[in-house]
Amino acid sequence: MEQPGDMAKKLGLDRQSRVVSRLRRWLLLGGMVVAAGLAALYWNSRQATGQPRYLTQEVRRGSLTVAVSATGTLQPTNQVDVGSEISGTIKSVEVDYNDRVKRGQVLARIDTSKLEAQLKQSLAALAAARARVQQAQATVSEAKAKLGRLRQVQQVSGGKVPSQSEMETALATFERAVADAANSRATVTQGEATLEAQRTDLAKAVIRSPVDGVVLKRAAEPGQTVAASFQTPVLFTLAEDLTQMELHVDVDEADVGKVREGQAASFTVDAYPERTFPARLSQVRFGAKTVAGVVTYETVLKVDNAGLLLRPGMTGTASIVVEQARDALLVPNAALRFVPPQETSAPASRGLVANLLPRPPRRSASPPGGNDKQPHVWVLKQGRLQKVTLKTGMSDGSLTEVKGGALAPGRAVVVDVIEGKKPS
Image (cartoon, rainbow, N blue to C red):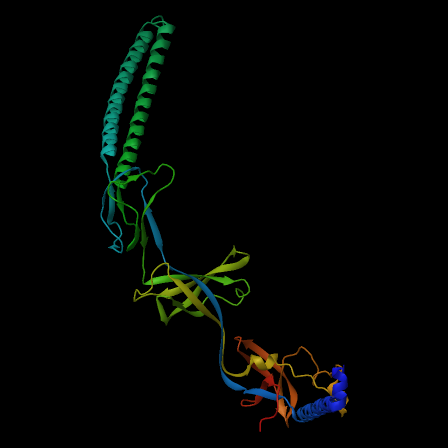
């Protein structure tokens, strides 16, 4: 019986299959050669035409302002907490929130029933003490008269009568009477002092405003018990003048050396996001505050609030002007940060196979002009980079003042490089 292979040989199919397979290999190899050639041509063309493009900005004249930002809260210029020095039950409250009050105006009254009873007791005790003074004075007069009579008798009798013992007793009686009288007078003085203290407590039962101002807080209600044993309870908080306020901001330790009294400032609050309010720095306090490892110094800004738009406790974001220059030559900070691309040597001509293989890394030369740390920018001269050394001044983070150097207004400086082909 014939095998399938013998049948294929007879029919000539085996030779045809080998021819087709060989043709496929040659076509695949030819395609790879053509693709490699096209890739090499593309690469060489790109190497020959690819040049960096530079992004430039012009140097110009203008005003430059350097500011320090800080956040804080608005506070009244003078805020007073009003409390009670005596304990008792609040009988009435005469004012409410936002009420305007005058100095001496009654804010609240404390029930004085107990104080009045104590005052009556003190009055009675003082009257009794004064009566004892009169009694002691009478005893002094009696003892003095008796001592005087004994001395007369002693003179008449030539010292025989009365006896020495009787004379000493009479003298001691007189001196005790004088001491009792002094003690009675001291008791009267003590009673008068107690009476005065109770009258003062009675007067303090009427709580009055110490300043002209506005009621910010009220913590007193009729019937409320006030206990002033160890700490004075705060019943009212008054702001003396809301037309003049203060913005207390925390300035970072890195910026505190730049701020000083008299500098102009401005701030915004969330209540009026489209409006900026002017202010002026009045005080930089020496005491430091450390929060989460950040050291800040409290700085006070004076604020005119004649329109009463601002309220105590509002959060303000302030900008304090620390330096300002007019008609200064300004250069973009991006130009000062620009680093030229490293130049590479021209690629040598390579063969077809070499173009298909990976290239070894090429060593690059240092950027033109060196890499010193002196401030400088780069300009284009006849299509090539040229370094210009500068003397710089203050900066606001976007622009920097130029105080010296071969730059003129309108000169373009390089701020960035764009890798790619030249535009057609």
